[in-house]
Every structure is written in structure tokens, then in C-alpha cells.
Length: 263
Image 1 (tube, helix red, strand yellow):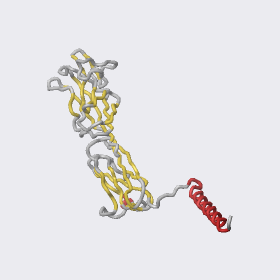
Image 2 (cartoon, one colour; image 1 turned 45 degrees about the horizontal axis):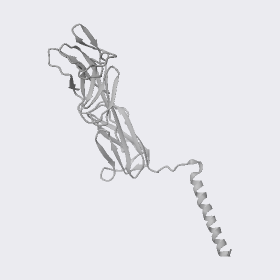
Image 3 (cartoon, one colour; image 1 turned 90 degrees about the horizontal axis):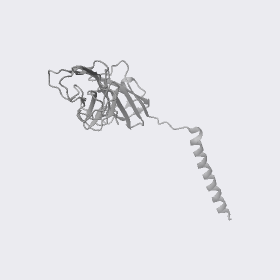
Image 4 (spheres, rainbow, N blue to C red; image 1 turned 135 degrees about the horizontal axis):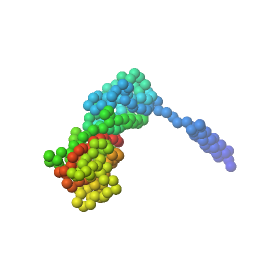
């Protein structure tokens, strides 16, 4: 082997060792490089009641600054905040006023999901879940045989259900409904252990029970919480699994809420 080849081999070996050593230094101790500008959190500003129809303040947190972030409020609205025509950059470690954003929720009572994603000048994603106050719609369903009655009706004051929402419907154990002149009194559970025949509006479900419908979805209701994921948008209906409504008396108390799960 001539001298030039020997020198070349030594140079290649030396470079390989240097590259390996650099890699080992980078991996030593499992350390991870943290971005200088990092979005880490979003939280409700303290001292607020998470009510619908009122501006709520949310505080961003992290390290350094963000040029722009995008906030998905989980209710169909998405907004950009920061520089690029939307104000000054967000100082994630500065005064609360420099990293506060505001949003007003309407519509559904229940769970909200807010997701903020860094889009320029920083990295990171943060998510917040919280519940509104009050947490559910309260509905008193009173049966009056002197008025026209129907098997199902749209839940009053409840907004349109959007696809993907997690819907919760809970019936209280009192008051109860009398389904016939001689008694037959049931809470929203209906007749336990029963399976309605074909002459009932909802065969196969419990007789005289609460039925929740988001057509074409049909869900068995009761005094426990019936929870389901909306497969489509539509109006939520409350139904009674009874084919003869004219002799019914009494009422049920029902709570309805929904979790908007966001992206």
C-alpha cells in the first residue's frame, strides 16, 4: 500500500470517529433540544364563570414568543392570533394581558374543547377542556291528556346537534308518569325487563320508557345517562315508548348536555 492510500484511510477513519462522537454527544443522557419559543398551555383566566353568551378570557403560556397561533374553539369557529395583521407577537412569558385571547360561546351547554396550535415563530400545541355553568339543559316534560300529545317532540331550547358531538341525556327518578287509569306508573326507565312488541312506537326497547332520537339514531333512555356520538346533524327528539298517550298523566325531569370535542 502506498503512502497516499495509507493517509487517505487514516483520514476517513478519523472523520468517521468524529461523526460517531458527535452523534454520541447528541444522544448522551437522552437529552432533547427544547425550542426557544414553545407554546405549552391554554387555560381559563381565573375568577370567571364559564357561562354561555359572555366573553371568556383564555391565557396562553409557554417559553418565548409566538408570531401567530391558530385557535380552534371547538364550536365551529377558528381564529388566528398574533402578528401578520392580527396584532403584535404573543409574549408567552410576559404579562397576562400580552397573552390573553377572548371568545364567546353560545349554543350547547356541556363540555367545550379549545385547541391552540403554533403556526409561526414558535412550536407546540395545547388543548383545554372545560364545562359550562350551568352544565346541562333542564327540561320538565309534563303530560296533559287534555292537550294534543305526540310520541316524540324536539327537545325545547336545545340547539341543533352537530355531527361528532357526544350527547348526554339523563332522566330523573322523580317525578313519574301514570300510563293508565289504574296505575302503571314509571320513571324514564319504563318497565324494567320488558321488550316492547310491534304495537309500540319503538319495538325492542323498554315499554313506557324514555327514548332519545337523532334520526335515524335511536337510543334507550332512562334514569342513568344515555350517551352517544352523533352520527349526523339534526334536532334531538325526546320520545315516550307508548302507543296510547291520551290517558297519560304526570311528568319526567330530563337533563341534556353535549361535549364539543374539537379537532
